[in-house]
Image (cartoon, rainbow, N blue to C red):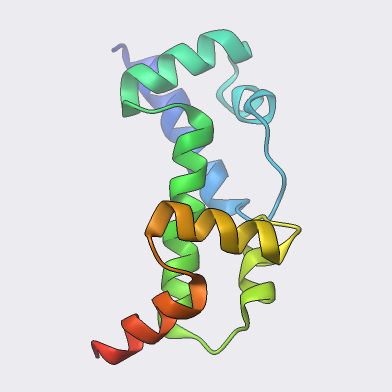
Length: 113
């Protein structure tokens, strides 16, 4: 992949990391990369192996896992910090992706320290 495309993808990823709490669309990400959303999606997938939305979801759940393991923030606060407006939706998706509810994950993470 050419240098310009790699830098565009990296710029978009850095923007995602800084805006986890915000609602982000592929159009928003493409704007940061200075590409059309269709070209951006193709280039992003080629560079990372996943779609921009899947990558953003992975970043959000990684941050949620970190917060659950290292803070006393409640699940509603964590869900808001990682871009979910509904704690219920966050909890359901977390369980589907991680294999445990946020509370179960927190208990497990703290039990292994």
